[in-house]
Length: 432
Image (cartoon, rainbow, N blue to C red; front, side, top):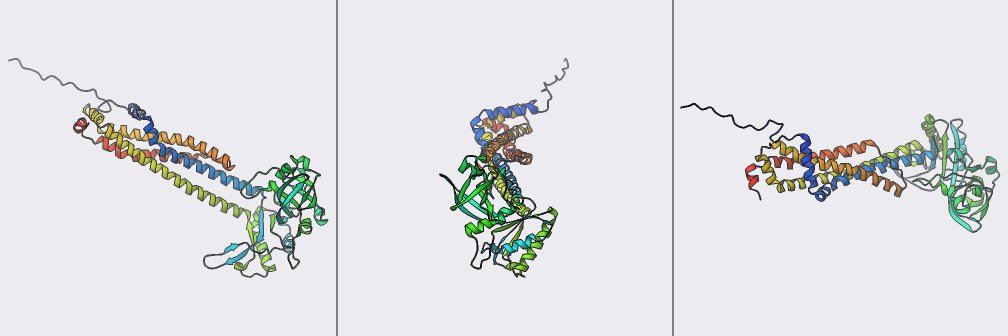
C-alpha cells in the first residue's frame, strides 16, 4: 500500500485584516455608505451644522460688539473721568443701589476741580437738551450741548471744517455753534456748505463756526446729531438755573494729564466734592466719579460673559446633533445587518466592522462641522451687517467647535459601531 501524504490546505493571503481592508478602504466604504442616502446624511448632520455655525457666529458677533464698544468709549476721549450727579437710594449689606436724582454738581464745583492743577489736562462741564433746529425750510431734531472749549480735546471732538469755539466766545456769550456731521447733512446736504450759515435753535439764531467729522452711530453716543455751543450762551439763551440761582450741570468730563494719575485724581476729586457737599459717609454721596477704564472693563466683561453664555447654549445643538448621529447609525446597523453577516462570513473581524461604522459617524460629524464653519461665517457677516457691527472671527472658536464636533461624532458613534461589531454572523445572515 502506497503511503499517502497530507496535502497542504489552501490558505487565505495574510493581510491586515480578514478582508485585506486598509484605512483608505475603510474610509471609502464608509463614504459610499453615506452617499447611498445623501438626504438622510444631510439631515443627520443638521444639528452639528447648526451648533458649529451658532458658536462661530455668536462668538464673532460678540467679539465684534466688544471691539465696537471699546472703540466707541475710546473715541469719547482718553484718560477720562466722568463726574455726575448720583443719589444713593438704598444702602446695607447688599451694597448700594444708585439711581439718578436731582442734579448736584454746580459750576462752582467745576471751577474747584479745574483748580486742582497740572494733573488735569482739561475740564468740560456739560448741559444738554433736545431741540428743533431750523435752516430756512429745513429742520431736524438735535441734541444741544452747552460746554467749555476744552470739550474739543477732552471728548475727542475736533472739527473737520472750521474751528471750535474759544474761551472768548464762552466769556462773551456769543451765539456760535459747532454742529455734528448728520445735522450738516440734514440741513445743508454737506459739511462745508454749513460753515458761516445761521441756524435757529429753539427759536434762537446761531452762527455755525465748525462741523464735526462723521463718527458713526454707537451704543453710547450719537455725536453726529450733536450741536455744541458755549456753556454761558446755553445758560443765557436756553435757561439753566434752579430757584436758588445755582447753575447745576449734567456731567463734568475731566481729562488727566497722565493715565497713571487717573486713580489718584479720581480719589482727589471724590474727597474734594465730599468736602464741598458736606458728605462724610460714602453711602450718602450725591455724586459719582467714574473712571473710563473701569467702565470699559465692566462693559467688556458683561459682553464677554453674555457671549460665552450664548455660545454655551449654541453648543447644546452639538449634543443634540450627536444624538441624531447615534440614532441614524443605529438605524443603519439594523438596515445593514445582513451585509454585516456576509462580511463576517467572508472573514471580516469585529474590529473591521467597528472601524467602518465609527468612521461613518466620524465623517458625518466632521463633515457637518466643516459645513457649519462656513455657515457660521455667513451668519456672522449677515448679522454684523444687520447690527452694524464688524464681526471679529478668531481661530480659537473655530478650532474648539470643530474638535468638539469631531469628538461628538466619535462619542455618539461608538455605541452603534460596537453593536454592529458584536452581531452574530449566523443570525445576521438569517435577518430579513
